[in-house]
Image 1 (cartoon, rainbow, N blue to C red):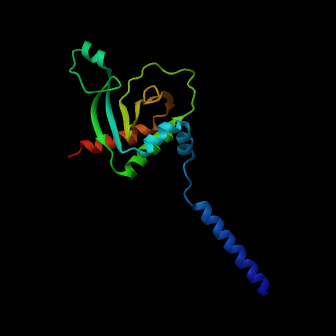
Image 2: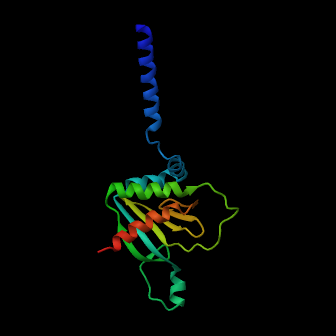
Image 3: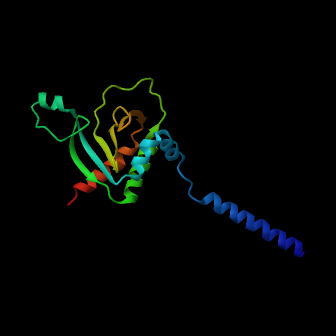
Length: 173
């Protein structure tokens, strides 16, 4: 009888431990996949930067603005900056980067849509290194610029709501 009680107790403990492990939040595999899709030199700057800026961009290139008779804006890779939001809180930076990583995908659209009307940007500085991202959620493209090379990849529009929430929050009095 005692052996049965001990065996039943052990079985219940193993079952409880298994259920507890299953119930623990698992890392989002799409974040890990997206993080791995971004070149390591760029990722290092994005994740460790001293200065992290989230940008709202005018989708018109500077020449198009001039042709349209619009006033010039401060430029970020030839796109006017409408709003700059410094992201100083590490948890906020992590949320923005997790959203970016979650949106990054190896999707092949059979060729990119050609619009590239970026409305978002990220600029991160780490000592003398800079990582700049110019993002268009209409055609799902990210153009990334660093000191050594330029990159391009696709993204889903998942990060857009996170980016917009931070931009909107910064406009609140």
